[in-house]
Image (cartoon, rainbow, N blue to C red; front, side, top):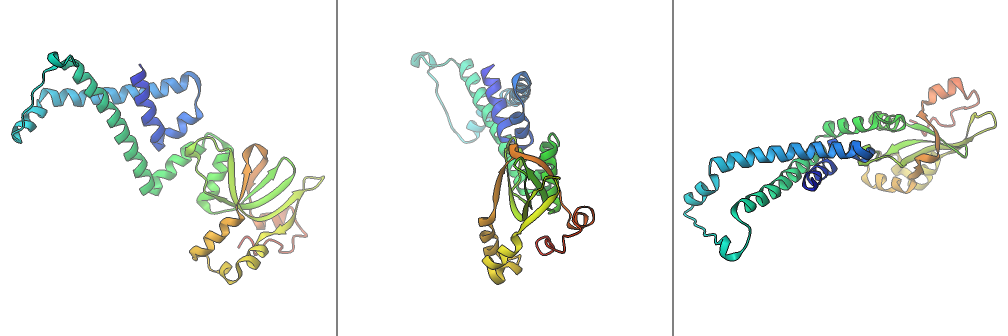
Length: 255
């Protein structure tokens, strides 16, 4: 039983298609999910092992290379032949689980569409994470209201729900402000102007790698448990419905 669970955990923990699920599970559902994958891999390994043994492939390979071996198990008081085969079977199951999970992991990193599919599956279970995922896919800003009524508008940075429950979100701020007594948003800072002063002429060259590194200094990390409202943000909609006195305050920041 421990072997089955160990094999299942190794596969589910490394494979991005299953990793986000086990991190969000607990109790018997987690044990069952890991156990099912462990059993399937063990059965698959057993079938391969049986076919290799039935075809006597090890002996054929050794004969083809003129190799020979001699086992004196009884004299060495080591494992008997059946126990040795069981040990090899267990090691093979572990190796197969690692190979399958690492292959899936590498595949998801090479092919972005596959990685996005895993991320979407992970984000669908949580509305906040789904909004963050859609924002990163469409390259659109989000509006974040914290429990202290502080407000940020920014671009979501490096969002990946497949690593587990999202406890922090990172944004590149464009605007910040607060909600007044009537819960109306009041912006007080336009970060675009700060970027212009700090970066100078480099701020106009979005393809500059040095610029991207310098922008990292402005990233803000926000605990998700302090977020009360998270939504997409569109400057035109904001002007029309909430800010008759906006007067182009955020135009440059959101271009």
